[in-house]
Image (cartoon, rainbow, N blue to C red; front, side, top):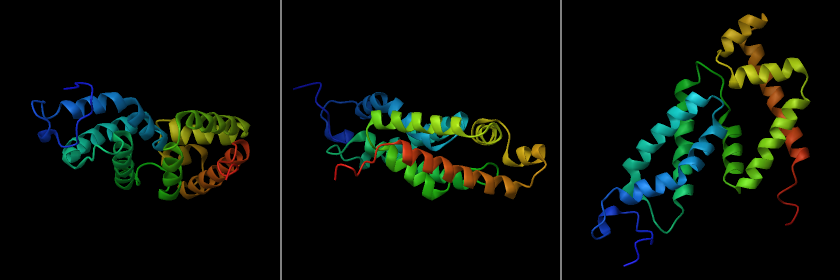
Length: 189
Protein backbone atom coordinates (compact mmCIF):
# COMPACT_ATOMS: atom_id res chain seq x y z
CA UNK A 1 0.00 0.00 0.00
CA UNK A 2 1.41 3.43 -1.02
CA UNK A 3 1.38 5.69 2.03
CA UNK A 4 1.93 8.83 -0.12
CA UNK A 5 -1.20 8.25 -2.17
CA UNK A 6 -4.02 10.71 -1.53
CA UNK A 7 -7.06 9.13 0.01
CA UNK A 8 -10.67 9.87 -0.76
CA UNK A 9 -12.50 12.80 0.83
CA UNK A 10 -14.47 10.48 3.09
CA UNK A 11 -12.01 9.57 5.86
CA UNK A 12 -14.06 6.56 6.94
CA UNK A 13 -13.39 4.81 3.62
CA UNK A 14 -9.63 4.64 4.19
CA UNK A 15 -8.80 1.41 6.00
CA UNK A 16 -6.60 1.91 9.04
CA UNK A 17 -6.27 5.70 8.60
CA UNK A 18 -7.06 8.10 11.39
CA UNK A 19 -10.30 9.84 10.27
CA UNK A 20 -8.88 13.36 10.37
CA UNK A 21 -5.34 12.62 9.15
CA UNK A 22 -6.03 13.34 5.49
CA UNK A 23 -7.87 16.56 6.32
CA UNK A 24 -5.00 17.81 8.49
CA UNK A 25 -2.49 16.90 5.78
CA UNK A 26 -4.45 18.76 3.11
CA UNK A 27 -5.03 21.79 5.33
CA UNK A 28 -1.35 21.95 6.28
CA UNK A 29 -0.32 21.66 2.63
CA UNK A 30 -2.68 24.44 1.51
CA UNK A 31 -2.66 26.63 4.63
CA UNK A 32 -0.70 29.52 3.08
CA UNK A 33 -2.68 29.48 -0.15
CA UNK A 34 -6.04 29.65 1.66
CA UNK A 35 -4.84 32.32 4.07
CA UNK A 36 -3.38 34.32 1.17
CA UNK A 37 -6.63 34.03 -0.78
CA UNK A 38 -8.61 35.40 2.17
CA UNK A 39 -6.01 38.14 2.66
CA UNK A 40 -6.58 39.39 -0.88
CA UNK A 41 -10.29 39.75 -0.20
CA UNK A 42 -10.12 41.45 3.19
CA UNK A 43 -8.02 44.58 3.71
CA UNK A 44 -7.44 44.14 7.45
CA UNK A 45 -5.08 41.41 8.68
CA UNK A 46 -7.06 40.70 11.85
CA UNK A 47 -10.27 40.28 9.86
CA UNK A 48 -8.51 37.92 7.44
CA UNK A 49 -7.21 35.87 10.36
CA UNK A 50 -10.69 35.63 11.91
CA UNK A 51 -12.20 34.51 8.61
CA UNK A 52 -9.37 32.00 8.09
CA UNK A 53 -10.12 30.43 11.47
CA UNK A 54 -13.84 30.29 10.68
CA UNK A 55 -13.07 28.82 7.27
CA UNK A 56 -11.01 26.05 8.89
CA UNK A 57 -13.98 25.16 11.10
CA UNK A 58 -16.35 25.08 8.15
CA UNK A 59 -13.89 22.99 6.13
CA UNK A 60 -13.74 20.47 8.95
CA UNK A 61 -17.54 20.35 9.26
CA UNK A 62 -17.92 19.85 5.50
CA UNK A 63 -14.96 17.47 5.13
CA UNK A 64 -17.28 14.51 4.55
CA UNK A 65 -18.60 16.25 1.41
CA UNK A 66 -15.16 16.80 -0.15
CA UNK A 67 -14.71 15.00 -3.48
CA UNK A 68 -11.10 13.79 -3.61
CA UNK A 69 -11.15 13.81 -7.41
CA UNK A 70 -11.21 17.61 -7.19
CA UNK A 71 -8.64 20.08 -5.92
CA UNK A 72 -8.65 20.59 -2.15
CA UNK A 73 -7.29 24.13 -2.65
CA UNK A 74 -10.12 25.07 -5.03
CA UNK A 75 -12.72 23.54 -2.70
CA UNK A 76 -11.26 25.31 0.35
CA UNK A 77 -10.98 28.67 -1.44
CA UNK A 78 -14.59 28.34 -2.60
CA UNK A 79 -15.71 27.89 0.99
CA UNK A 80 -13.40 30.73 2.10
CA UNK A 81 -14.99 33.03 -0.49
CA UNK A 82 -18.43 32.49 1.03
CA UNK A 83 -17.05 32.93 4.54
CA UNK A 84 -15.59 36.30 3.47
CA UNK A 85 -18.95 37.34 2.01
CA UNK A 86 -20.71 36.27 5.22
CA UNK A 87 -18.17 38.17 7.33
CA UNK A 88 -18.64 41.30 5.24
CA UNK A 89 -22.41 41.14 5.53
CA UNK A 90 -22.12 41.01 9.31
CA UNK A 91 -19.41 43.69 9.55
CA UNK A 92 -20.62 46.06 6.83
CA UNK A 93 -21.98 48.62 9.31
CA UNK A 94 -18.65 49.07 11.07
CA UNK A 95 -16.15 49.32 8.21
CA UNK A 96 -16.09 49.72 4.49
CA UNK A 97 -15.52 46.51 2.57
CA UNK A 98 -15.43 45.67 -1.11
CA UNK A 99 -18.80 45.20 -2.79
CA UNK A 100 -19.86 41.67 -3.78
CA UNK A 101 -19.07 42.54 -7.41
CA UNK A 102 -15.52 43.69 -6.65
CA UNK A 103 -15.07 40.78 -4.25
CA UNK A 104 -16.12 38.35 -6.99
CA UNK A 105 -13.70 39.97 -9.45
CA UNK A 106 -10.85 39.73 -6.97
CA UNK A 107 -11.71 36.10 -6.15
CA UNK A 108 -11.91 35.18 -9.84
CA UNK A 109 -8.51 36.71 -10.47
CA UNK A 110 -7.02 35.06 -7.38
CA UNK A 111 -8.03 31.62 -8.62
CA UNK A 112 -5.49 31.97 -11.43
CA UNK A 113 -1.81 31.16 -11.15
CA UNK A 114 0.39 32.53 -8.36
CA UNK A 115 2.78 34.44 -10.66
CA UNK A 116 -0.25 36.20 -12.14
CA UNK A 117 -1.41 36.99 -8.61
CA UNK A 118 1.99 38.51 -7.84
CA UNK A 119 1.75 40.57 -11.04
CA UNK A 120 -1.65 41.91 -10.00
CA UNK A 121 -0.42 42.68 -6.51
CA UNK A 122 2.53 44.60 -7.93
CA UNK A 123 0.26 46.39 -10.43
CA UNK A 124 -2.08 47.47 -7.62
CA UNK A 125 0.85 48.73 -5.55
CA UNK A 126 2.18 50.63 -8.57
CA UNK A 127 -1.24 52.15 -9.27
CA UNK A 128 -1.66 53.19 -5.63
CA UNK A 129 1.75 54.88 -5.82
CA UNK A 130 0.56 56.86 -8.87
CA UNK A 131 -2.23 58.44 -6.80
CA UNK A 132 -1.62 61.87 -5.31
CA UNK A 133 -0.62 61.93 -1.64
CA UNK A 134 -4.11 62.77 -0.35
CA UNK A 135 -5.84 59.94 -2.24
CA UNK A 136 -3.08 57.43 -1.46
CA UNK A 137 -3.32 58.28 2.24
CA UNK A 138 -7.12 57.90 2.13
CA UNK A 139 -6.87 54.45 0.51
CA UNK A 140 -4.25 53.26 2.97
CA UNK A 141 -6.08 54.69 6.00
CA UNK A 142 -9.41 53.16 4.99
CA UNK A 143 -8.17 49.71 3.97
CA UNK A 144 -5.13 49.20 6.16
CA UNK A 145 -5.53 51.56 9.09
CA UNK A 146 -7.16 50.87 12.42
CA UNK A 147 -9.79 53.63 12.12
CA UNK A 148 -13.36 53.19 10.95
CA UNK A 149 -14.69 55.11 7.96
CA UNK A 150 -16.68 57.32 10.33
CA UNK A 151 -13.54 58.20 12.30
CA UNK A 152 -11.69 59.06 9.10
CA UNK A 153 -14.62 61.16 7.88
CA UNK A 154 -14.72 63.05 11.19
CA UNK A 155 -10.97 63.62 11.05
CA UNK A 156 -11.25 65.02 7.51
CA UNK A 157 -14.36 67.08 8.29
CA UNK A 158 -16.38 65.22 5.66
CA UNK A 159 -19.46 63.04 5.78
CA UNK A 160 -19.20 59.25 5.83
CA UNK A 161 -21.11 59.10 2.54
CA UNK A 162 -18.63 61.51 0.94
CA UNK A 163 -15.78 59.19 1.96
CA UNK A 164 -17.59 56.14 0.57
CA UNK A 165 -18.20 57.93 -2.74
CA UNK A 166 -14.57 59.04 -2.92
CA UNK A 167 -13.41 55.45 -2.24
CA UNK A 168 -15.71 54.15 -4.98
CA UNK A 169 -14.18 56.60 -7.48
CA UNK A 170 -10.67 55.68 -6.35
CA UNK A 171 -11.38 51.94 -6.68
CA UNK A 172 -12.59 52.48 -10.24
CA UNK A 173 -9.49 54.55 -10.98
CA UNK A 174 -7.26 51.83 -9.55
CA UNK A 175 -9.10 49.11 -11.46
CA UNK A 176 -8.71 51.07 -14.71
CA UNK A 177 -5.01 51.65 -14.01
CA UNK A 178 -4.48 47.94 -13.30
CA UNK A 179 -6.32 46.88 -16.46
CA UNK A 180 -4.07 49.15 -18.49
CA UNK A 181 -0.87 47.91 -16.85
CA UNK A 182 -1.59 44.16 -16.86
CA UNK A 183 -1.37 42.04 -20.00
CA UNK A 184 -4.78 40.97 -21.26
CA UNK A 185 -5.62 37.34 -20.43
CA UNK A 186 -7.73 37.15 -23.57
CA UNK A 187 -5.00 38.38 -25.91
CA UNK A 188 -4.04 34.79 -26.79
CA UNK A 189 -7.64 33.70 -27.54
